[in-house]
Length: 279
Image (cartoon, rainbow, N blue to C red; front, side):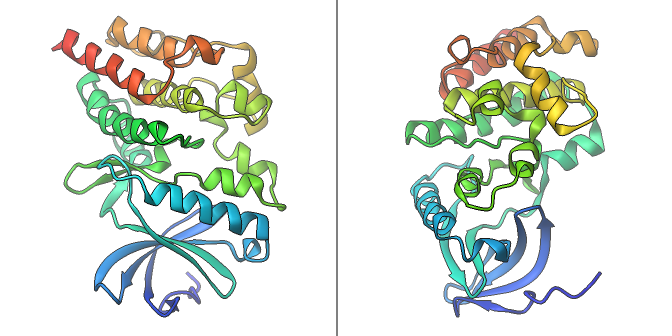
């Protein structure tokens, strides 16, 4: 692997970049150290092409501030944001562990009790955000972190919105997560708390069955399938899924936003009811 020029750098004369944790299309995440407080942090460093985009930087700061005001165990805490030379960056709580994507790849479909254990903290975190008027817009297994202690947290609030507002958007930003987007996000780009609910419904389907509901040759084909197709019942794909989960997924992934749970709090109450019924 080529040497990463950022490793060993000191951002904002405060944050020491240590080792790379993950790389995506828009950003790279590093383990870092806040040298002022002497605490480990995660540093999400945006691609340098965003540094000259004032619209992006303004939105990035606004979203970071909004996310930093949220305090909820189900959300990865945002501590700080800044721009160092060519790189806008976010400073976040470091979650030692892996992602839900890694867990799914390793273990495949989950039994219902494990699905509930993942959904509850994610829904609590999103409910706090929805109450504050924030929409995540990019709920997917890569954005759900599971710590070595078993804590489940959702990351990356508002980044999609910041990137979508940038002058340099590419369809890849929207289509990178085509499997989880709500019909209205595909159709108009609009997102509300019930759009996050749709994505959570698809995520629930995947936790239960080990696969996402729509397959297609391209991200675009996958995205457009949900415009005129319902998400199938998980029990049709795998044996042993209780009917309560079919109903949960059906309601969360209704094509019309008004037919879904209104927000994460309402879906969370439904998950609690299912858990109670199934003991």
